[in-house]
Image 1 (cartoon, rainbow, N blue to C red):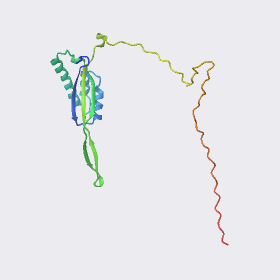
Image 2: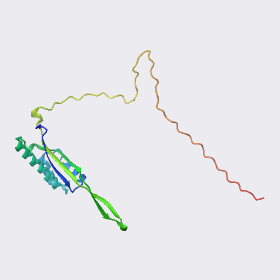
Image 3: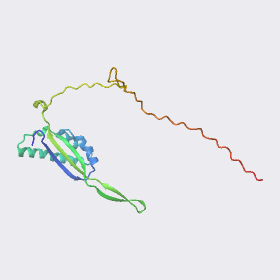
Image 4: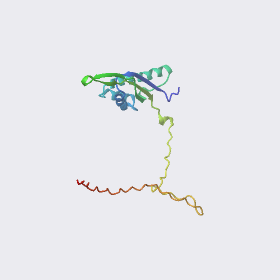
Length: 185
């Protein structure tokens, strides 16, 4: 396994929270260092925050355990949240009483939450990143006019104008003549 791409993950399945609500908290910690993410979760006022904090601590423990077992030299202070996703789990169908003897159906959602942490690579020390000079791109003229590619004796193609349909003219409305009364004879 390549050490540079080593990531340590933890997963909590069948969490009784909707994935949408879990994603709100996960967006706060994505890409942050583990210490900062734990501080953020400690002060986040959402019901799912403690379970995500527990999951992040589990991923951190997985990192320390695997590094000791396989002999990796991992700096825990250099870990960051590489991936944090909340996928949809199964839904529980429930019924709520409604007026006039009817019943409304609703769904209780569950989430599978996954967090992966990885060590930030020391880019400056390794010299892996090379800076590329930006390419200049010339913009095409905005007028939309095309120039003829051929010169001299060659016939140029006739310009085609877009087909436009003329608006139909309405005929003036006919005046109704008053109905003549039949006379009795």
